[in-house]
Amino acid sequence: MTVDLLSRRLLFVTGKGGVGKTTVAAALGLLAAERGRRTLVCEVDAKGNLADFLEVGRLTFAPRAVQDGLLAMAMDTEQSLKEYLSLQLRIPLVARIGPLARTLDFVANAAPGVKEILTVGKLCWEVRERHYDLVVVDAPASGHIVGQLAAPQGINELVKVGMVRDQTRWMLDLLEDPATTGAVIVAAPEEMPVNETIELAGRIEQETTVDLAAIVVNRVLPELFGRAEEEVFERLRVAPAVDRLGLAVGGAVTPVLDAAELAVTLRRTRAGHLGRLREALDPALPLLYVPELFTRSHGVRATRQVAEALGEELGY
Image (cartoon, rainbow, N blue to C red; front, side, top):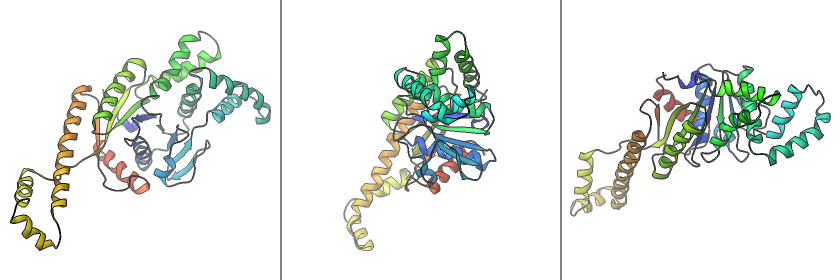
């Protein structure tokens, strides 16, 4: 049974760099908030620019309101560790946590999976405590997301008893429940992003216990010209039609006709990549299309346009 995307409580948005992953994460957060769900959108990459898509100042570990019903934060594993120590070990003063935190931070940097646990654990904790109706994660790019999603499972298999196993167990309960958690892969209708999306979809299914909730294909070109218009363009390229048209508009028309031909070529090429993507994926997996905006991609206006497109795709 397909679970409605925004009815889940934790969404990891990932994809190849440059396809619009952060745009889609911000748009999903905005869409959920506008539909009345108190939403947190969290940026995991320290070099990310989620703030640009919401037109706010630099984000920090402390969530802050950026729109009605929408809060935003930036992940900081050191701060996550200190919060964990304060909550779980009941150490009241930050000053007393310092030396222990530094020691564990050293371990986090040295041991694989620990930093991922600090990140995923913080996000799961926000879900478990029901601080928000939905947490949207602007997650790492496709090369790193599998390791992050699989970290609780890996540590749970290594540690058989004790508090660490208990902690990873409740994380896994949330991550393994498709009604609660889902992964969203953002793609673009181009050869390399489609290849990476197909590979990543397989890895998420085989190497993690997180449900793949949807594929969002960003920057889909609309059908600008039909066959009839193409035939007209061809006739306009030859004399005397091209000369008469140039005189009528007061300038060269060949660049305009070249641009129209390029638009048709790109549309057909990308349609081929989209067809290959559809054939490679489970037919039951939702495939959501976001059109090419032909505008600057940063800022609340663009984010809202993407949110509206996603809303239409989801049937809202």
